[in-house]
Image (cartoon, rainbow, N blue to C red; front, side, top):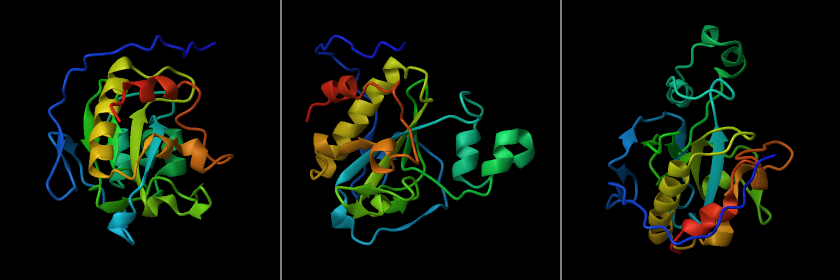
Length: 200
């Protein structure tokens, strides 16, 4: 059984070399891999939700560059049986934080990434319109890494400072906005610990 309760402590986090650019589009200092799977937001002023996801490709395996391939429509179906099922998907996220805490950005925050799919928050549908999506490399059953939590917390702080409608109660998991359809980031994600690291 996973032990998710961590002692709440004041951490002196190592500051990351990232900042959101003047236009609010890119995380300067992050690795950039541009995804074509995005489009214009209906209203830039509507950004008021942060969605945390979990992803591993193949399932429960890490590394290998397959997430990049998925988000850039370059996944080779013959490379793994699971890829044959998903290689035609057209999906993306704004940001990925891998198991080493390294950040890759695929879609500018100012654009609509295709991460939430059919979804609803507080009765409002189509969460992609007004949400920023962050993927954590991981799976439902395995604990996320400490460096992922600290990196996620700092990136979250930057996002929430830029888009101040995103408050703690507007930070959700994919499973919260697509219940029954999605389970990520899963029970292995310690949301209380993550929220305790924020400076909001």
